Amino acid sequence: MIHRLVTRVRSLLAGKPRLRKAPRRIAAQEHGIQREAVSRSAIRVCEVLQGAGHRAYVVGGAVRDLLLRVVPKDFDVATDATPERVKSHFRRAIIIGRRFRLVHVMFGSETIEVSTFRAYDVGERDTDEHGRVLADNVFGEQYEDAARRDFTINALYYDPGTGEVLDYHDGVRDIRRRRLRIIGDPETRYREDPVRMLRAVRFAAKLGFEIDPATRAPIAKLAKLIENVPAARLFDEMLKLLTSGYSVACILQLRSEGLHHGLLPLLDVILKQPQGERFVMLALARTDERARAGKKVAPGFLFAALLWHEVLSKWNSRIAAGQHRIPSLEAAIEEVLESQTEKLAIQRRFTAEMREIWMLQPRFERRNGQAPLRLLEHLRLRAGYDFLLIRCAAEEAPAELGQWWTRFLHATDAERTALLQEAGKSRDATGTRRKRPRRRRPAQAA
Ligand code: ATP
Ligand code: MG
Image (cartoon, rainbow, N blue to C red; front, side, top):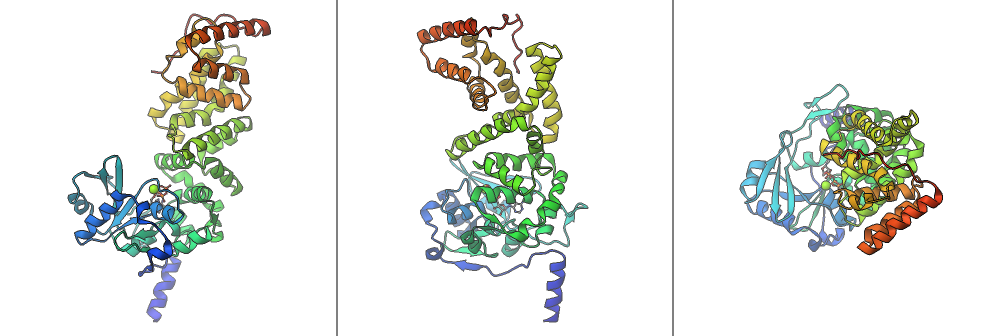
């Protein structure tokens, strides 16, 4: 008894969550998940593994979403079988990752990610000086696997065989109360992985949950630990936040938590320039609409929008210094990409798209001669045009310009000729016609 108490106190001091070994088992009629709502591929993976004598469950975000009656994005499975074992049971399966070895089992276009239960042992893990876990790839028991997950609502296991949900940390209760609660000692868990602070904000905003006071409390103090997270990891998490369909809500929440500085480098960039905020918020609101309608969100477009005002202010100061329009835009773009991409870990594959979207903007203003017709063949016309519409909505480009392009894009050849003439006339009338563009066409990114 005393021994158990001592162990308990010690583990509390170490910030180790109380590892509840036996889960609460919640029957199908109580939790209400319909088997039909579960991916057949995920069920198949569980059945095959269970048939071979293993334990296997649908786990994580999918179970949370099913309980919330939201359609899950994807399905993950957790099992006591090793990756090699898992792979051996399926025809189309590959082992991925070096640090975390996971198995991807493919069924048509669907991929089920299968992970082996991982151990959770604070004392023996390899951490940096702030407590960040550097390696945790030791296999363990299911209750340990549950304890190393981030939030109680993400640590639920659904067994397609029995229809039960296994709940080690009162996640089902927290879903009912709409509470986001971290598993274990909040400060320790954030130190182990500072990205969990971002995840807390993302889940709260996306699910409309309240962050439990104890889970929220240490965030303000620890926010700066985000800086120690490798940029590529941060980028992935940031992309999840921005494409969650709830990016505006996430950003408002980050702000209300006082977390908008330091937590997300890109946000600092945005919020440093209040004149760009209107534009950014509009761009994010549109992105949210797209994401919620199930459409693809192009990261290149998103980052082009987020950094646009940075480009714009550099562009303007070059023009004010007497440089030519197009070369100064090119130079401003290079400057921004150079200073931001490394810090933000924006991958090169996105920067080509960003550059093209930006370079298209002045070209939309040229409505004389053949210029608009030539633009119709541009590969990024659609993205550039969507971008233009946001600039119009933010009132930084004339609404008339956006309307003209909308008509032009949907017009027949004859209508296009008329539109070109109309544009020529209105420019003469308003006297805003610029001198003919110089010979040199704006360089396009390869
Ligand atoms: P989403 O719907 O956004 O994908 P998710 O909960 O599935 O939400 P993932 O990032 O796909 O989130 O992670 C899957 C699961 O892995 C989580 O539900 C959680 O149990 C666990 N997990 C992910 N990231 C962490 C982390 N940083 N620390 C602890 N557990 C994590
Ligand atoms: Mg997921």
